[in-house]
Image 1 (spheres, rainbow, N blue to C red):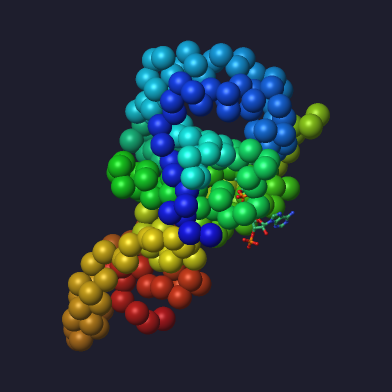
Image 2: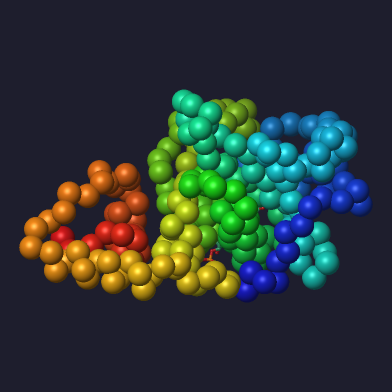
Length: 234
Ligand SMILES: CC(C)(COP(=O)(O)OP(=O)(O)OC[C@H]1O[C@@H](n2cnc3c(N)ncnc32)[C@H](O)[C@@H]1OP(=O)(O)O)[C@@H](O)C(=O)NCCC(=O)NCCS
């Protein structure tokens, strides 16, 4: 599956059959997302205000060959302060288009779009601990599982656990999702190699900045890549 076969585009008036179907058909939105019938007209009211593209949240239609197959969405999440923010993304493909690589391709395009058009450093995604296809799709995009959020989603008569996944800006280029579709080569690779070699030749070990995220370094090592700006070695 080449992700160029997939297009993400703004919602149009003639797409509302999709949201109406998702609002009343549990299968259409996915059983792991089902939280009861919804007002099918609420998306239309939001659309009239901002085309479903606001500063803190957005929604795009996923299509292939002109056929609408689902949608992706994102919203701003903060951790303590308004400036400590990231995007949380979601996806829903219609049942007849699942398990063909399209969900992986659409999410790859969405994270690329968000990193290209916003200064976000982190994109995260929740998924039910039983939602194996979405876990696999997230990992193919390059997401890392951060951990379990216990009893966070009420579904099917009970509170369910979610996995929290995240993808940092650099990891789109160094993680396992790199090479999927037509992702660009890592920017500044040659420069960071040259700097790394020069630093290695110094007679002392320079004091670097504190490691921002042990997970990032661990992840990059396991992916066989070196985070930009860090020297090789133990
Ligand atoms: C989740 C979803 C977006 C994934 O998109 P998709 O196009 O179906 O997924 P892909 O084909 O890209 O990848 C699915 C992967 O999961 C694997 N998979 C499918 N069913 C599986 C199962 N029961 N157990 C383990 N892996 C499974 C597939 O084999 C594939 O991996 P592979 O390429 O290594 O073989 C899509 O199925 C969907 O919209 N589901 C309903 C809504 C939903 O659950 N959204 C996510 C909510 S957080």
